[in-house]
Length: 185
Image (tube, rainbow, N blue to C red; front, side, top):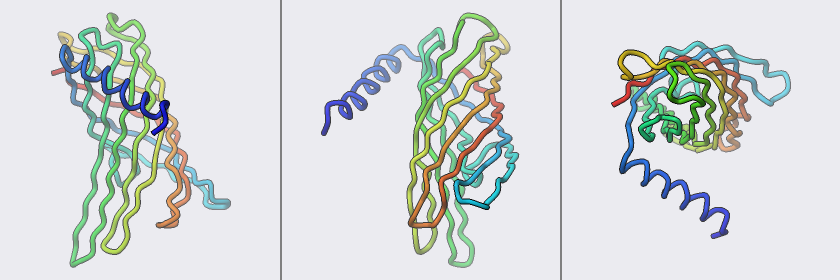
């Protein structure tokens, strides 16, 4: 295993263990308005509004976060699952991303945020299943609500889902407005 790959695994694990000891948890969800474009010539684009975001639209919807007390640095896991079983035919879609979010001026009620992450998208049926990688970046703003019990957030995002040759799906590019909330536990 290369040293770079090993460092990419070990360093985040050490950071996560330190944060988990003295960490603060959050649970949230989001809705999104996205434009999806394929790299296949002549395929056009789709506009999707999902409330909440969901795996059927290639986006996660349930978000679990871990951060320090200041909430300036957050490690996030976003996931989504769609499963259908009807008369012997099955379809399952699963997405999960791990990301890092930084809040500038974390002590303020309203603060700019940036987010970057990577993950996977699993598509499966009764006969064939396949997994593709995904990555994305976002920038936006969050606003602390109540007596520091959570946040409302808005971010503009770019996400890319790599092609899946086994299923014949081309690579997809997403430009999205994502609105969400996080409850601080």
